[in-house]
Image (cartoon, rainbow, N blue to C red; front, top):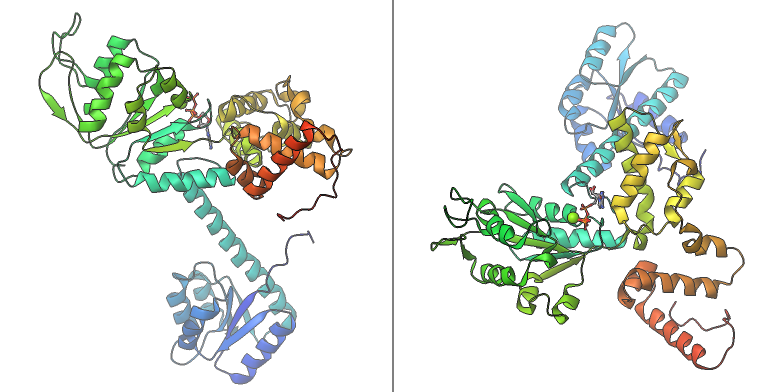
Length: 472
Ligand SMILES: Nc1ncnc2c1ncn2[C@@H]1O[C@H](COP(=O)(O)OP(=O)(O)OP(=O)(O)O)[C@@H](O)[C@H]1O
Ligand SMILES: [Mg+2]
């Protein structure tokens, strides 16, 4: 047996109108370690099933009130994961066949052979558990789909996804901030698809891709003859997105002159087409994204402060991949499966070394870079396992992989310092987020920082582990 947590004993419901037979079966199965309850007919069994939630129902066929087949028909639909085993009198194989057709897992002939019974119950239980497990997996998959294919179990991602659900309900403007490849566009889509406007259009525009004049007419549309080449009236993205969501990617690249118009839209929800006088009113929810520090651009006067505040009603911060390394195996497997499927390859796993490498690399290009690395590895793989040889030679790994180099050979206090410093690095110095990432209190981090600062200032006593840990 593996070291998995012990499963709870199976729950079995015995249904038989003959008291002696019933009690004998109950005793026998209880001796085998199962949790067993009994009922004297199909009707009573249905009642017991509600609370007891049996995984296996072992039922006689001929019973008063509601017989075995009746029970099967009534219970099958609402208890899809319960395995039914019917007991039939010797010679009445027809009813047994009928029971199997009605969805029974198997049948036993009476008088019941005890060895056969115990093997059959064990198998039925296994079947019921597999069925439950499959259902759980399906539910997790469904959940993933409703999250728009966003993978992330790390607390920072869980928090983000919860926030996404919350903000999706309103029309509030959202600013998504994060490094390249962290999934900003994915989140923008998730906001739309979880919002009441999900049936409406989701329109995206990359503000960095177009020259100023083009961007303006792309956003607001233009009238016929508004400029050379404007041979017909054209709808802009705002109009196209009416009733839905407009995703403005790389919002920092909108030129100052256009920022004014954008601001006006956010304030009044109205605009004019280029070269037009008619004021148009649309119902559009704006989601913007940037990998730049907009506050910094505001200080540099390259981004309007008033627009910044209008956009920043809700800000979502995408955690970089290196700040949620525990998600790397999940993502890596996801991409491996996806690319293997695309290519029709049979690739099943990563070697331990390969996974260690993936876990220690800092991923400056975040999830996109991981995706690309895995795609390449899938194409290069020779067997069913991706090894280190197929991964890019991450030049900087040796430098970053400090933890692996360190352990063993350092004290816990030194390790703690590495962990805290790297966590702070990963979340731009926010002690609150670093604390969450490390699962310790914010005060503890602040206390340590103070300690280290004091030490650096004068006394040079080495890190010791005799410090009092009043925060644990
Ligand atoms: N949490 C995630 N789960 C699964 N796939 C992800 C996740 N995050 C990102 N990806 C994938 O990584 C790639 C990059 O994501 P996306 O385009 O959303 O990033 P971005 O932040 O918009 O990047 P950029 O700033 O470069 O535009 C996409 O292929 C996306 O599907
Ligand atoms: Mg993007």
